[in-house]
Image (cartoon, rainbow, N blue to C red; front, side):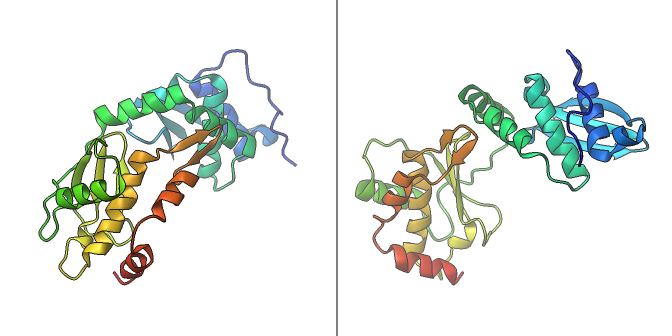
Amino acid sequence: MQVLTAQQPAAVETNEQIFARVYSLVSGNAARGSDPPKVVCLLKPYVNTMGKLHLAAGTLEVRLHEMIASAPATVREALAWILVSKLFRKHAPPHFLLHYRQYMNRKDVRHTHQAVRRVRGRKFVSGPQGGHYDLDAIYLDLQARYFHPLMPKPLLGWSRRPSRTLLGHFDSAHNAIILSSILDRPSVPRLAVEYVLYHEMLHLKHPVEHRGSRRRVHTRDFLAAEKLFLGLKEAKEMLKKL
């Protein structure tokens, strides 16, 4: 059985040293007495990804988001275990996964990440008017029936590609609701479009809950409110036929 504490981390380690040590443990080089590959760490202006690895010609290139590159050493080590384990198609030890998730779910970290996404992320928003349906009109109708009249309206738009798997999503970083353009067709009943938009509007009213390492997108209040939609069963049946 592999002992994860075979080599104790130094008092102060660089990112290169952390990834080299973890690589040796995951790959088995430490047990065989083999030297780890040369490790080169690069900072990348990622939007969502915290890190990527590329191994070639005896060099392990570690590409890190600057948020994680300056995180506490224990968090950087946790990410190293996650990325290197993935490189070798292994499962990272659960306690490292838990520690990393707890850090990423911290309120200050989440807010910083949201700010980075807002500045760097490119969000295409077509506008509410589609070829058949006007999301502005549907939004105002749903707002009057189910929500507070003063609830702020986000950006509304249709996706560039007609996805069948992702019918809608709410992007909190850009305050935008995007519906799949597959719904913008005469053959799709308005009730189905209303339900998808209503579902995404609920994300405005009932934000994601963060507790420790857990992230709950559909809270109890969210699910209870979703059941208030008139024609819920019929709408879901319509969407199954797309």
